[in-house]
Length: 636
Image (cartoon, rainbow, N blue to C red; front, side, top):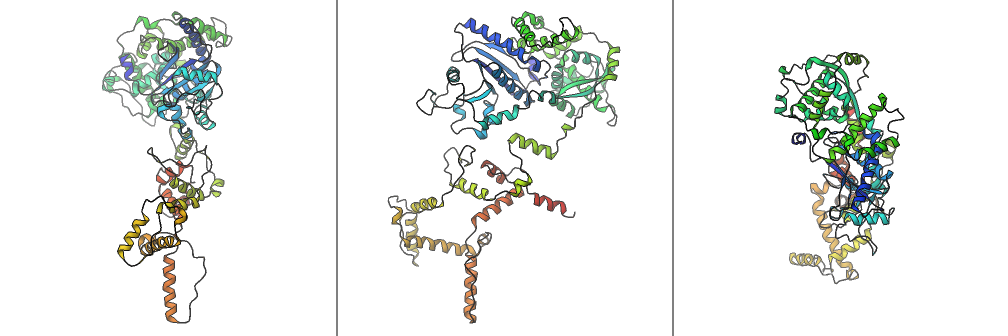
């Protein structure tokens, strides 16, 4: 088993728990019997979906877990999903369906990152929910995602200062079954990841032609799920594994046949995208790249190496691990529920189709029950060796099947165009598509309003808070209140300005004083005029610098200055007009929008400060199609 763990990315796992919410028997023996009956019924209910499913690493498993401390007896399972994240979300779908079909059960799901359902819906979570108080608050119940809030009144909700335990959470769910349903935005964020199931299961498979030894053909006919272990063995190979493939003991290259193998898309990508040249001593050769069957030869060669690596790791088999499903106390109830759910599709017992379905049921039961009950199970390599010792290879029949294979499926989905990548990113982020019509109606005032609201937002020690939240009211910016608060901060009025530098320093000290006792009404007009004079002096100094000239200024709407007939008066008025033009008010909104659009355009469609800041506030700028058009029309 230690060798098997080597091929497993132990960090990538999903853990799930099923709790009995209502009518829980107090007798531990009776409760165990009830929970085991649920295991039988659940596995039988999911058999049509899971019997043919190919898992990346480990299968969906369920087992009884006795009570410990505050955690009552329940059903639990753990699956290492490795590189295929779709296995994790498929399990989320299964858990949701279990709580829908069995309303007496509530379920929690976590992975190595913790509450990954909350991570998926992070943009829509309420402000009170934080990592330190999120434990035991997220459940699937009656097929719906539930979020138990912290105490907000004198009701029966627990104290937010301490995490509630499982028993408290189950009592709340039992008492208020409809009160804790998550908001629509959170629910949609989760449903977006699982909405394609169960139809998506077929789309996750890929069938490809492979030249493999006949022994692999019969093994995969008996156990199609073993293809994942073989691909993982090849994908995670090391120099010691390659050494064992110098001479093939179990899968000779001269016994190769063309067959059709079913992969998951993740497994197919892992197998096909790795560059590998076999050892000449192995006897495996690959034709030229232009050969019509090059891909089938290459895939078959890699798959054969994977199976050989699996077998090379085996030292022997454990007789305890080869027990038949009928040895489990759960098998009788499981088989009875299969018949009740019409798993055998009305086939007569003993017929070929019935035996085929029975074989699938036995394999499914072994994966879901036996492998969760004991560590004394056959490793994939040991299982391959056992099948090789029991199965008969009929070369003539297998060669006849070569002429009747289903066509090789197109693998163009491996090539990801920029447009497809953009669509995937938009779907993952849940952002809406911006069509040409939306671009024409786009209002740039949203940029300035959002930035003003962001600047006016009061932050805490936890960092800056973005003002945008779908659940909040639209942002408003009260200019009068802001000006009033600014005048209070400036303090009492200073005396009139004179040319003495000492007086200037004293007045600045008065302006920056922290005297909060004076009321807004005590600020005299002279004080405001003095402040304005200081601002005008600074504006005059900056007006002729590069900084002052870099800003776009408001147009003068006060009329056109008229010139007199005298030359000196005309010259003087021109100087005044030029000076007044330099001191024209800066158009803050226009400069803000211009700078942000320039920054956004320079990102060239990539992530950057402008897009990140605006998107965090709910503002999505359209693509710069004008610039793209100019780039295409420029001569090269």
